[in-house]
Figure 1 (spheres, one colour):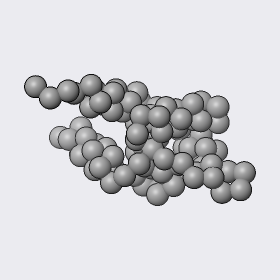
Figure 2: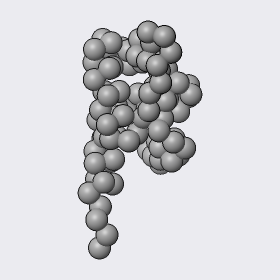
Figure 3: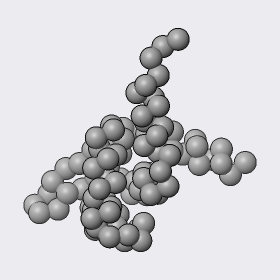
Figure 4: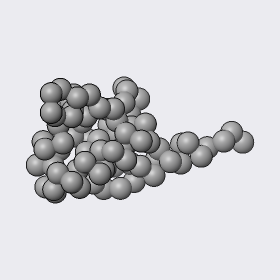
Length: 92
C-alpha cells in the first residue's frame, strides 16, 4: 500500500463545509481577496482568513499580495477538478 497520509490530509481539508465553500467559490472566481471570501461565505474576515490560511498550509490554495490586499486562488487545476467532480457526484 502506498503512503496515503498526504491524501488523507488533503481530503480532511476539504471535509470542512466552510473550507469547501471557499474552494468552490475559487472554482468560480480565479482569485478572491479575504474580504470577498468573507462576504461570500457569510462570516467574518478573521474566520475567512483562518480558513484560507489552513487551505494554503495544506496545499489547496495559494496567495499573492497586491498592495495591502492578499488574494487567494486554488493551488492548481487538480484542486479545481477534484472539487468539481465531487460536486457533480454529490448531485447524483
